[in-house]
Image (cartoon, rainbow, N blue to C red):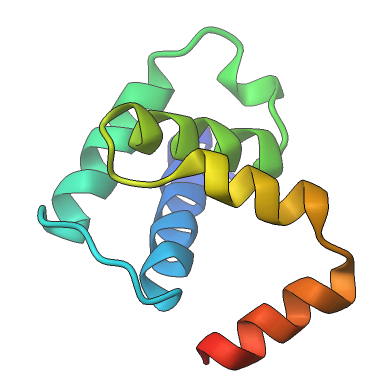
Length: 93
């Protein structure tokens, strides 16, 4: 898969997951996806990062703009058992 296509797909899926959790951005998704994908393509060695590493970079960038609460996301992941996370998802669905 071409690197640019891969990066755009990861950005798109990360943004879609964020929106599916009930949160939304003031800016259009297309604008945010284009900006994030372009920004990530400029990073050195981006092609060596895994999908989860790229998703975390996306969340860090959104957190720096106060668009997501990365601290809350991190606490949820690190302080919860898998079964707890599944229950959170079911309640929010």
